[in-house]
Image 1 (cartoon, rainbow, N blue to C red):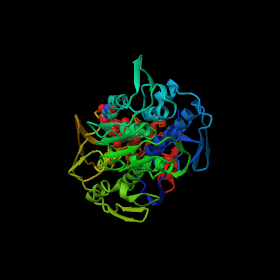
Image 2 (cartoon, rainbow, N blue to C red):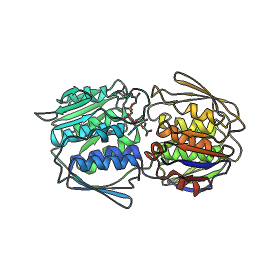
Image 3 (spheres, rainbow, N blue to C red):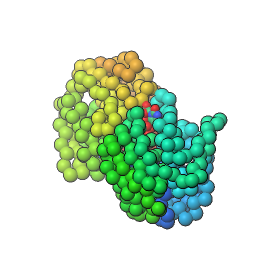
Image 4 (cartoon, rainbow, N blue to C red):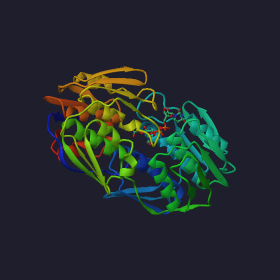
Length: 417
Ligand code: EPZ
């Protein structure tokens, strides 16, 4: 099994390029199923989750190949409607193929998705919304056998919680449904807007994405197009934590700064200087870190839950006590025990985590518990005395392109063994 080995206490300085967003690329790849002919997705990140989505497309009969930073998909050979169990287990977001396959083929068979264990990952909102659009779903032995004999029908959907995945599934199912679908209390994440922009580029008629009420007017069919995946706002926040904890200075390029408006103030409260200019964000943490009174994770445009673990890591070295409230997932503090092994002082009670900043952190042997938790271990190791070895790093590779290459290019002593 591969491991990351990090020698801590090196300031990070220089320039990092932000890669395309995992959480946009995945629904976009699912969206390709709806489009006849050839689609080119540019700025598509080299991540194991993206590779898994490409394998799902190939299993369905599509032609899917990578050419440098682009993934090319041709759906002329689309034949199958069932997604293999092992691929479904590999990642949670494979559930978003359901809406797209139903939209194109009218039937779909897949098992409950796997992915990070961030607490129960129910799909009740996905199921009830699709049933309202006419889908017949037979659930037994963890397999969803779905069909919509008389075709998907547009309708009004109201979510009790602005679920990102459920919003994406309904948009994908509604794009070629008969009639109009209105989603109330839709997720507002930028990845939703990216999906709507992509589908509109394929000929869909989606209005108001990014707002709480999205209107999708079903069209007959969609055609392929060329589209560039948006920058990854969570990778940006992760790099900012790396600069913060090492007291360094980074310029991060190819960023969409409007997507991190809830993240920047947190780093400013930590005492970092942060400037944005065009698609750059510059962060300077030369003057040490201060604790942040309270960070609450919220649906967009609030502070993103995916940046919680890596921001927590930076706060482990801040002067004072910080409080984090994780409002999105039930069990998103799995990284805490591993951070504590490196000398962090963190106590959790339900949704709340209390972080007492410490002066010294020590390298240790730790293991990634999930994608963002794994990234938080890398962040802490950058500021720990001595050597840290991180195992189970396949979880980190799900969302970060060659993290050791990027960080060593700005001064980190990190290698993959
Ligand atoms: C997406 O997951 C992201 N994944 C997650 O990023 C992100 O943390 C999350 O949105 C919130 O922003 C992808 O986009 C691939 P949700 P998703 O549906 O769609 C509950 C990462 O690290 N819920 O908004 O699964 C659910 O249990 C990953 O990149 C239901 O109860 O998130 C959770 O508590 C992790 N029933 C909350 O809603 C449902 O039917 C938010 O889930 C659906 C969700």
